Structure formats: C-alpha cells, structure tokens
Length: 612
Image (tube, rainbow, N blue to C red; front, side, top):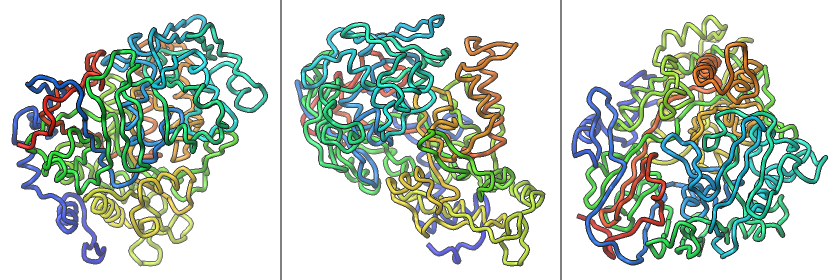
C-alpha cells in the first residue's frame, strides 16, 4: 500500500480509509456483528460497545468412549516448539503445552493457589518459607513418579550460570542462596531443602501476599530430572528431550511432533485425575486467512488464538458455539531505551537513547486514537487501555489513570515545548540538537489488519511531524520480531507488542530492572522503589504488603507513575474468542471453571464435526 496515496490523515477518518484500502472490514460489518445473535454467539453489552460471551458450552448427546479432538492453533508463523515452562518464550508454545505439561499448582477464580493440583503449598509468613509437596499419584507420562528432585531441578536449571532462558528474575533472586548459585560461587542452592521424596522447602529473603497468587513469586514448574539430567543445561533448549520427546504429567502425552506445524497427543494413562475421555488430541497450525474456511468444513473442533480482527467472518458460524472471555493480555507501543546486561541480569538504561525524551514518548501516545482502532478493526472485542495492569485484576487496576487518549494538539505542544522543531522545512521535526530524527518502528506481520494498523500509527505520528518508518521497510515475522527485540537490535527504536499478563498483577516480571522481559530496557530508582513495595521488599510508616488497602495504593501509585514516564503506551485491552464445535461435550473456558474440569474431562458426541 502506497503512503503517497494515503496522504496525512487523522483519527477515525484515517482508520476508515486505511482499512478500506487494505481490504479490511467496514462500519456496516462491525455494526451487524456486534448486534446479532444470542449470548452464546456474542452480544453487545448495553452502552459499552464491547461484545459479551458465555464461557461454558454444554452440548446434548451421549459422550463417545474415546475419539480424537482436532484443534487449530491459529498463527501465520511456525511455533517454536520449546516444550518446557522453564524455557519457552511465546504464547503459542504455552497453548500447545496445556494438553501435556501442566503447571504444578491449581488456582481459584481469583488466580490464587489452591492445593488440589499436582502440588500442595504450605506458606509460612513468619519463617519466610514455602513448602511444596507432590500430591499422591502424580506421575510423569512415562510412568515415573514426580518427586522432590523434579521440583528442585526446575530451580537448579533456571538458576544455573549456563541457563539460556528468560525466567531468571527477581522471584528467583529472592531465594536464599540463589545469587551465589547463579554466579557459580556455590554448587547448590542453600535456601532449598529436600525434605523427603515428595517435598521441598524454599527459604526466601522476603515474602509478600502476592506469593499466594499463581505466578506471584513461587515457581509453578517441575522438570523430569531422570529424563533431562544427562543433557547439559546449556543444551537443554535445543535438545531432543525438550523439542521432540518432552515429558509432562498432564492429561495427554506427546506422541509425535512435526516441528513448527503440528503436535499429536495421546491419552496419558498415568494422569493423576483419571484417564482422559478422549483417545487423542491433534493440534495443527492454521494461518489466520484459512481458519474460517477450515472451520466451515468441519476440519477442527476448537480454534485457539482466533483472530479477533476477523470476527464478523465467523460470528454466525454454523455448527459452532463461540465462547469468549477477557484476555489476560494487552497491546502496547514500546520504546527502546537501553540494553540488557546478561552477565548482571539487569537492564542498562541509556540516558542518550533516541527515544529518551519523556515528552516525545508522551506525544506519540496522544497522537494515536485507540478508541478508533478498537472500533474499526476489532468489532467490539477490544477497548482502549489506560494502564499496564488489566481490569481482570479487579481492584489492582487503577481506573483513575487517564492514560493516552487522542489529543494531537497536546502532542504538538509537548514536542514544541521539548525542543523538537522542524528546522529545515521538510515537514518533519528534528531532534533537540537540530539533527535529523528518523524513528524506526518494528511491527509484526500476521492477519489482514497488521499492515493497516501499522500504517495508521505511522500516519498519526507523521501528522505531528515525526518521521516514522518501518524497520527494514516491512512488517517482521513473529519469531524474527522477538529475536531482534530481545537482542536490542539498533534498527528498532519503537515497536508494537503485546503481553500476556499471566495470573499475577505484579508488573515487576515485565518492567523490573532484573527482568529480561523488560524489552524497553527502561529503569529508574523510583520505579525500583515502587516495585520493592509491591513485591514486599519495602514498606513505610503507613503499612506493608500484608495490608490490603496499603498494597492497593502502591499498585495504583505505580500505574500513575509508569503512565507519566511512558516507557510504553498501553493501547488496547483485549477479549478473546474460542469457537467450539457442537460435537464437543461440556467445555468450560471461564477463569472460574470447576477445579475438576480439564482436558481430561472433555469428550465428543459423534465421529465427525457438526457443520450446520
């Protein structure tokens, strides 16, 4: 699509024209899809503009003994295939692992750890310890029992000097003796004690209530030591044991992997919650542009990661019920502000980075109209984001933070006052030193709207006098995008990304000084201080992390500060949609699903998918 043909456009008018020019949806399609159908197909909440869905589907008919569930993983890129909680990096691998490689803890509707999963937790606030005990009957898919050594091995791998993953963060440095183990000064982690064959106790430097939250500070993985111990830790990520023959204690076991394309699972006869109803599950990668046709033909029973920008094309899909829920995720514009020091495991913020001006970042936030993006592209399935903590986290979310809404006049004023001026009359502002300012924008390929949305953002920034160009002049493939982002590629100044938040509201794992996921490489002493309070490492005369009112204040203060500093601009809160074929018996997708529900309980009522 030619930039010259588009000209300089603003707001909803720009979006409408860009969308039409690139072959996207129309206002008519948006309106009809948002208002049609019953609750199971999606209806618009009165006055909200956001579509509501049911989270449970119950289909009539006698459940077959056995059968195969056919699942589509909707993505335009091959999956990486790193089947390990300790080593994987993207949501696609997580979607694949859910069938075979469970986390050790179960959770309730508030994402708090319960003791009816694979492992029970005994948390001692005064002693600053957590005791993990493997529950009876939990067995790896090869028949070997899950042991205390498997729990310990997960910590030994993540904390090892040769570890190649990105999970080592403040949650691990908080373990007594972990720093010495990480540096190679110690051969063992002194703060972890193996009590017996099924139990370990972990001692922490500091504890806080968030540790009772899934993902809130106590690691939720285990690794089959008997299967992996002969592989050097530096080689685990690429090993056959992880890529081709992974073990888990979930309801299914991996039986065959076609790298990047498909995974076949068979029922795990050793599953501790009982034998699965299904014989097998087959997951295949399906490109976004092909998924609606494939579902119409009854090729798949479930479609994971359904593209919400194409919602009108499948809103009334015969033979399927659409489930929906608020996604534990948000989309954002990130600014590159430094580099990652892998030896020190911390970000190094560069005060002279191209995007170091807070006013420049704020102006770019005010220049874009995310309400219009949500309306034009996402058909009521996304909404303007005001903070980096999603509303699904309830009181942790600060609804009073204004965030960045469309205000080009304020954007121009911020740039003028900060000294970004067009000194040579070419229509683009120079930097504060009068030098040419070209901002390289990295955005991912995928789906019909990836290009028009990227074009819209660049048009919006050009409208306030900023020369923004796509990195390499094109959209980047998913894996390449994140490889370059993690490597702090100098060809990326800003980028459009999205975060899956997990089940813990604590933002330290994404924006802490010691988080490898802090792709902006931004840090500050005040950010450290606020995160120390949230994470229970500091308190003040008014309270501490065990005081629910006080801790909420710290979360709210952090969101206000983070928004003003603008290392990222949150753009959209997201809702996700899951088509489920009407031959699938009782599927519950809610965050409050019965703890006994799982893939082992899902069955089918007939041999072939329903298509009408």
